[in-house]
Image 1 (cartoon, rainbow, N blue to C red):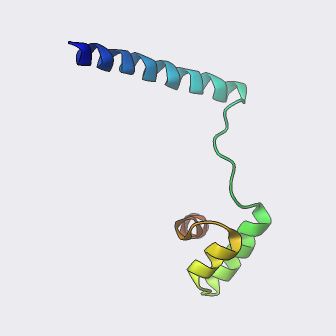
Image 2: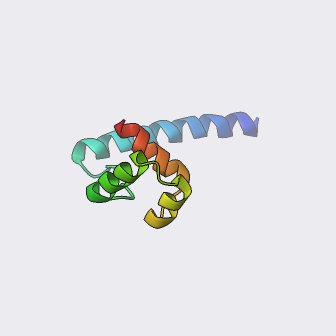
Length: 77
């Protein structure tokens, strides 16, 4: 009984959250996470990635995860 009520309440709360986020986006208050790297850093990362530098070393030097290196570079290419 309590589980069903909790699930119902969770659904209502989730709907309100989605509506609130949509309203905040329209008002320009909710823009999501800021990028880890600036545009210049992204260009440098891509240049070095295309030059076949070690991905782990690039991640260490830019202070990001190796998966983030691939995400940035694969989004452009």
